[in-house]
Image (tube, rainbow, N blue to C red; front, top):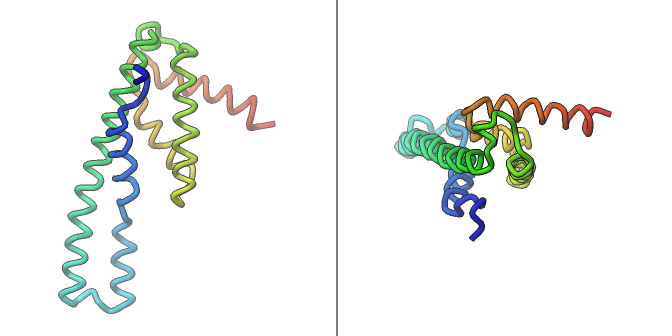
Length: 147
């Protein structure tokens, strides 16, 4: 296995939790429209929705923390954190990860910005790495996407 690869279990945990986290207000609106809110079924569904929401967001935070750990390890391994500037070996996987995450978000029917946002949450804040990454990505966006 490649030493720079993200653990497959961490990836599956993250994507599985992200797929199953449903918007609670939409569930409430559906139950209200079907006039099931005051029934036993409605109470059970809402209770399960609350429990699933709490567990889902907790697992999502855990999976982001695991990916953050992998990206921090990659930053230390490539010397990006200690040097205070990005190396090409660190920047390339991050860009691939951003585009892959955005692509997967689009495939599952979520706006692409949310996939990229999750990667932004996972980027470590050590040694000014997030700021350096933001500056480099702003340059890329200005050069490639703006014209």
